[in-house]
Image (cartoon, rainbow, N blue to C red):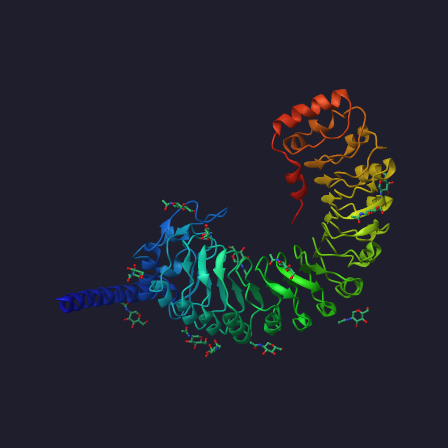
Length: 486
Ligand SMILES: *[C@@H]1O[C@H](CO)[C@@H](O)[C@H](O)[C@H]1NC(C)=O
Ligand SMILES: *[C@@H]1O[C@H](CO)[C@@H](O)[C@H](O)[C@H]1NC(C)=O
Ligand SMILES: *[C@@H]1O[C@H](CO)[C@@H](O)[C@H](O)[C@H]1NC(C)=O
Ligand SMILES: *[C@@H]1O[C@H](CO)[C@@H](O)[C@H](O)[C@H]1NC(C)=O
Ligand SMILES: *[C@@H]1O[C@H](CO)[C@@H](O)[C@H](O)[C@H]1NC(C)=O
Ligand SMILES: *[C@@H]1O[C@H](CO)[C@@H](O)[C@H](O)[C@H]1NC(C)=O
Ligand SMILES: *[C@@H]1O[C@H](CO)[C@@H](O)[C@H](O)[C@H]1NC(C)=O
Ligand SMILES: *[C@@H]1O[C@H](CO)[C@@H](O)[C@H](O)[C@H]1NC(C)=O
Ligand SMILES: *[C@@H]1O[C@H](CO)[C@@H](O)[C@H](O)[C@H]1NC(C)=O
Ligand SMILES: *[C@@H]1O[C@H](CO)[C@@H](O)[C@H](O)[C@H]1NC(C)=O
Ligand SMILES: *[C@@H]1O[C@H](CO)[C@@H](O)[C@H](O)[C@H]1NC(C)=O
Ligand SMILES: *[C@@H]1O[C@H](CO)[C@@H](O)[C@H](O)[C@H]1NC(C)=O
């Protein structure tokens, strides 16, 4: 009984197959022969499509439901997200990023019969905590695989290391996925063509940091943000000398930043923020500053820099655009020649222990969009330096000076702040006097957290401030402190 049913269905499907095959052949003669899709490919895609629902909340903030254009009887090579090889009509690329797909991706999915795939992007969908199937290892010609932000969970299968042609692998932001040391080592050994590797948020807590050194030396981008890595940073990261982007932030690395980071001279972005047990010693920082001349972003928030002299920061690459040194234990005067870093757009030196006054030459940082100096209680903003900031930093959108001593500043001088300002934090700055009513009349500013109300000000201000405060009841200090944490 079971057998005859099976043969019947096989018979029917071969009829169906032949029929489709013939229509494909014949139609290929008049339309565009180079584009027509092989029947089995089309069938696999349609079955793949049918195994998911379209759910408008499955793709976070992006939406492009590509499978909706997939219709039986049309050429699958023309479907949205599908690319075929001209000659053979086999699917070689499938890009279903942000396609609102919602459902489980099983190992028996017809996706895995698309053996000729070279690029596969299933990022930003919702696969309901599916395990990443070992079947992914069957795509022997795959060069690009992106499964990020798609609610995959469980162990990343070691079969991923069979994909020895991979140039780009992104499994990041699947918060319940994990990668064990053996699979990682296989991956590191076998994926010798890798240029981009993203595993951020994948649990790698058992992987020894030293095994990172075995990764392909052709890597240009390595993003391992919040992977729960712990232990010392590998001492010979310098081997990865083509790295342009390195993000090891929010792990639990310990010890100090190894000297051989000086060899990573191609780095454009270095992020080590949030490793609170990591320290930057003067010598290793000096080497980073001297040798990484292409840096545009340096993020070392929470890394212990208490032994570093702030002046050494002024020799950072003049192409630097983002500098994040929040809560690094830096102390001493703010360097008077910060103005050299004239391409800076984001500068966060909050919650250190800078002393003295804000140097005049901050006026040269005319590209600044965000300036955060909050929480430096021994730092003061004198009227002249504040005046210069107000006059020259015309692109400022965020200014945070909470707890910086501004007791000598006349509140009126703030009236001329950049009209593009949208956030102003002046909590506990000791401002006194009449509230400059012009400021909150900037509509963008009023919408934002305007934290004048704790400043010690008199009558009119306090009333005005209280009315703003009541509109932002939950505008707590906590939020203020964290807003610039990148
Ligand atoms: C389609 O083209 C092939 C080769 O170009 C030819 O042999 C065949 O007869 C054509 N079929 C039809 C239905 O025109
Ligand atoms: C749509 O997806 C969300 C999760 O993003 C889920 O909670 C919800 O149940 C799904 N809706 C349907 C109809 O499947
Ligand atoms: C694929 O596997 C899942 C889980 O093992 C099962 O529920 C489903 O019926 C299978 N689908 C097909 C088409 O065999
Ligand atoms: C993989 O690529 C090679 C070289 O382009 C090709 O000969 C081979 O048929 C491809 N294999 C598959 C499964 O597509
Ligand atoms: C993977 O997809 C995500 C979301 O679509 C995208 O942001 C990311 O840049 C992609 N990764 C790579 C390496 O291209
Ligand atoms: C490395 O890749 C090759 C080619 O795909 C494969 O034969 C081999 O088994 C892989 N080795 C590991 C450790 O995955
Ligand atoms: C990850 O697992 C936890 C605990 O099982 C669960 O609460 C959480 O929703 C999961 N995250 C996702 C994105 O599925
Ligand atoms: C990684 O590299 C180190 C030294 O370069 C070597 O001792 C170790 O065996 C390698 N690990 C693997 C798994 O290849
Ligand atoms: C991070 O490392 C430090 C020092 O080894 C240890 O004391 C701490 O418990 C670790 N924290 C986490 C969250 O693992
Ligand atoms: C780093 O800079 C120092 C001093 O400028 C120099 O001696 C050293 O050779 C540089 N290292 C690399 C790897 O370029
Ligand atoms: C910050 O600097 C001041 C003035 O130099 C000093 O008195 C204070 O102890 C320092 N605070 C910390 C936490 O280092
Ligand atoms: C800053 O503004 C003052 C007065 O408007 C001007 O004299 C000075 O040249 C400006 N500095 C820079 C670096 O633009």
